[in-house]
Length: 125
Image (cartoon, rainbow, N blue to C red):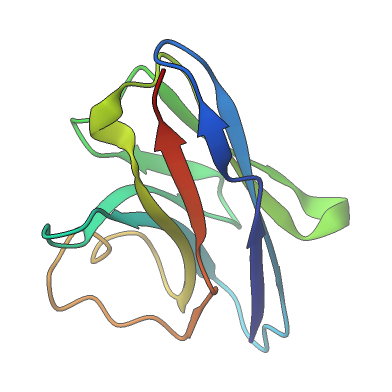
C-alpha cells in the first residue's frame, strides 16, 4: 500500500485545517482508512476512521463534533477536516489503512496494513 498524508501546519486556536490521505495499492475490499495522532510523551490515539465501501465513520470522543472524515473516491483520498482546534490537538497526525472495518482502530493492538509518514499539526497563537 502507498499512503501519503499532507495538509498539516501551524494554525491558531479556534482555527481549522484539512488533512489529506492519498491511499492506493489496495488488492481487496473492504478496507478502512483511519487517522491517528500522537503528541510528545503521549500514547497514539485513534481519532477517526472510515470504512470506504459503506462510508461508515467513527470518531473518538475527543474530536467528535469538531472533526469530519470524508472521501473523494475519484482521487482515492480521504480527508480529515478539523475545526475548533485547540492546543490539545497539537500532534503528529498519521493516516493508516487496514483491510476490514473500523472495529479495531481505537485498540492499542491495532495493526495497519500500511502507514503514512505523518504530518505535523501545531495549534498555537
